Length: 260
Image (cartoon, rainbow, N blue to C red):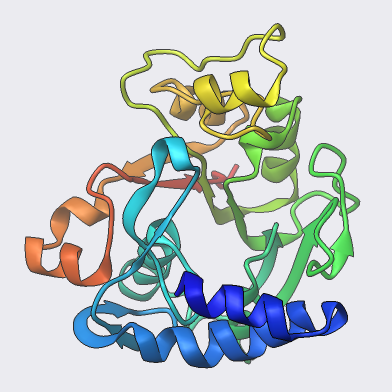
């Protein structure tokens, strides 16, 4: 595949490289090269011989990224959870989605049962430009909130959690996912860790400002949520886990706002 990418870089005008890469290489050529029936992506309904590697070189993961829709392990788990453990695809709901993934936003916008809005401070894909620590909605507005792999980027994460709780309706639910090191009893965050190299080493990514530990549930509870740590992936058999390309250690953080 690197040969194909090098060839495209050589023969294409600079202004066309990005567009051609997305349309031809990702959407057409890559799924063809990875064609097969060993793994299945439930997000795009694609069958492939394997999933692609993903992640920083220092912690590169094999079998992670879908060759067609580019979703990764956490996205496939999230989709399966919504399908099999919630009424998300059938019940009417007003949904707030922070940092929307393109493959999810496209699907959610086409679901007639949803009143859907996406938000982010930096993403050009999001429908609204919103600071997660100062959400411009009144209290108790949304039935469902999604926020995946965002809070580890936010310096004032407790304020963000409180804002997500505030805009959720009583009886509403949220799925709030973050990278977690289960070997850490407490979250690692040190203001002296500032360089990209240090952040990659300690936080797994140069843009992260902390690495959550086993106290993540406690932080969410302090914001008011009733938190269920659902080990859904552990209920699946080994064949399914391999076929979907999931991580056994990843739990779903289902957060409810109690009816007061």
